[in-house]
View 1 (cartoon, one colour):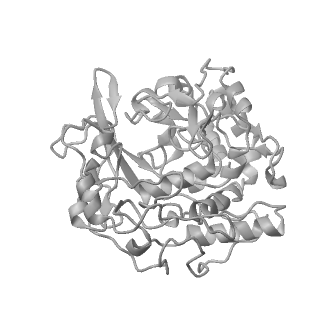
View 2 (view 1 turned 30 degrees about the horizontal axis):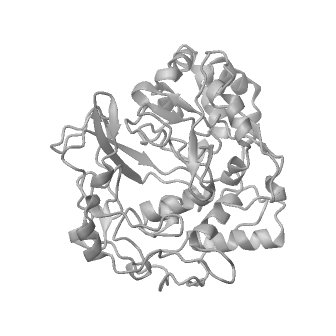
Length: 429
């Protein structure tokens, strides 16, 4: 059983709330930096030279519009369904050192962390973020490999550790990707408008303005625990380089082990950028992964989501103040994404969560700010909260703090039957 602690020891005096005893794919804790070399022999991935390199994935794409987790959006064209299938194939691929994996990384393929209850979902696998907080100012220790620890390496000499001067560390688990294309298609102006509204608790969120590396333009962030990413192509490129060590045209430089360029040079044997664009399709691996996420259907809601009792309690407690039930997409080149209702249950804004914040400043978010997590598909995305500390919806609500304290207190004051109605409602979204 995972347990929460108020401090993280391992001899460094770390101060953020974290979860103990997390093991990565190699069986080692990501906090002690002892993940062993982890080269896989999974997918046939023989180099990053632009052409599609690997055989079709073992799992066939689900039927569009089938109402199951992991299906593509309904109403896709034949070309879009092919894009989804190609993207699913790439998403299920396992990287190898010969193809560019590493030299430091967290896992060997997208699907490893995004597989439950179907490819594109989440898992309880977590990564470690760290930094140094001095007089209220957060330093991500970028020169020493921060703020993300890569817990595995293809060469023991390249293995990263949490620097001794880090005094903040936190776990984050993977977020589900279902319906991400619909979220991407919501106009920036719609999210900005959310920041001007306040509900029964009077809470208002903050817009996360970030730079989209694929265009160089300022956009409204909406992906990641800190709303630090605005588009799915950026999201894919960031994940490839930071989680798998695969460089691309948008992220052409490798992460050096704890910032040590000499250790990087000694262990990096594949020319960058490793993900090259296919001259025929005009796409690289990150484009295919972005296609898969963009065309992935949202989680299927259950009939109980229409429960009048649960919905009324959800709104009366103030949950809907931040977990906005619905937004609309704008115009999109993909008809299935254009002018659609998105029942995501999030305002996509940053909120000061007090003690529930992870202590890591990132993008536009402060150390205590977190993006409102979408609730759709909650029944299949536990454990809950950014670090997985809550095993139930009830536990997740009661752990809310900061701007969410008023809603938490209203929930705590409900009768047991009313609490159960609300829990059933959230589990049906």
